[in-house]
Image 1: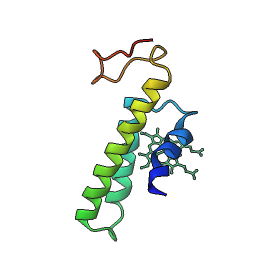
Image 2: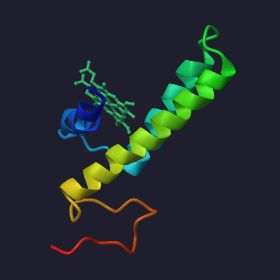
Image 3: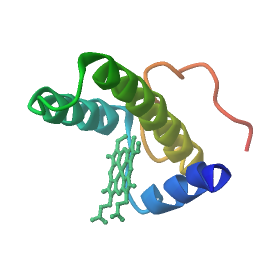
Amino acid sequence: MASLGHPALIARHRPFPVTHRAAERWLHHMQQALESTPDIDADSKIRMMNFFRHTAFFLVAGDELKSPNQQPLCKHGTSNQLPM
Ligand code: HEM
């Protein structure tokens, strides 16, 4: 099941523009949600945010491969345009 996770997650997000900016905003709201949840311990919150950050930017990379010429590149990816 775990090996199906990433392809399924990319497919689920394909209709949406998951940009660098959208990812930062998504992570901000996820952090707010965790901060307002006292039942989760601090160490778990850090581990969850690390996982969310990794996965969010994985989805941003997938989004940039989808249409590399239709939107500005992620600010960290200015020199790695893929050949057509
Ligand atoms: C990076 C920024 C992200 C944006 C902008 C984003 C946006 C969205 C949108 C628009 C949907 C569809 C909602 C709907 O159809 O009603 C969705 C679904 C979903 N997202 Fe994200 N997402 C992001 C990151 C993530 C991450 C990091 C995860 C997992 C760690 C995740 C897990 C999911 C799941 C599981 C669904 C399906 C929920 C369902 O079908 O009930 N997303 N996301």
